Image (cartoon, rainbow, N blue to C red):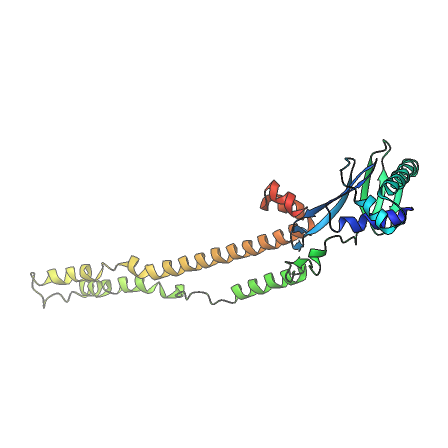
Length: 279
């Protein structure tokens, strides 16, 4: 009996059983782990079986039966005795050296207080039903900071290149004042030249009231288009600033997600979801 043969029998037994007992020492336990997330939640790992060591002893005699089967000249009683003596010796060596290598399985270790635990090899596979299963990556193309900056620059240029709403030139507005002054000139010229003879006293009333009929020009109606154009211009500037702020916020979130993903995940997931995401 040697340590390599023991490791071989343990691996053969855990392929078909969930627990294999080391008499007088403890048990190797194989536990099925369901599919889970890793790599900050962007990769799905397939299910697998995890092997660990428990100080609790089971009632199975798998190792005894395997050892007796491989040695036809031994009875199960002799096989149990040899196995118990070897495991007792292995236990003392483990307490002294603190580490024993089980070929094809991993390392059996002991703490300062001589509590035993097991560290499996990274490539250990004891789950035949999961043969061929591969991790699934949920990552797509991840934009670099240079690509994000270029996208923001292109968006700003596109917004600035949009034609501004047409605004009437301010030079045309004085025409309203000029139109107001036009009716007043004939009245002054007529009064100064004294050519009021062709008109009777009753006929002078219409001439004095004529400017009053042309005077009420509704300037607010003509200024309305100008105000509406200014309103559209202000509205366009507000939309432009909102878009720039949104793009800057998106860039900030991307940078924070790269530099401090755990801090960002704390806002996106609950504590239970974070525990599942980080295994």
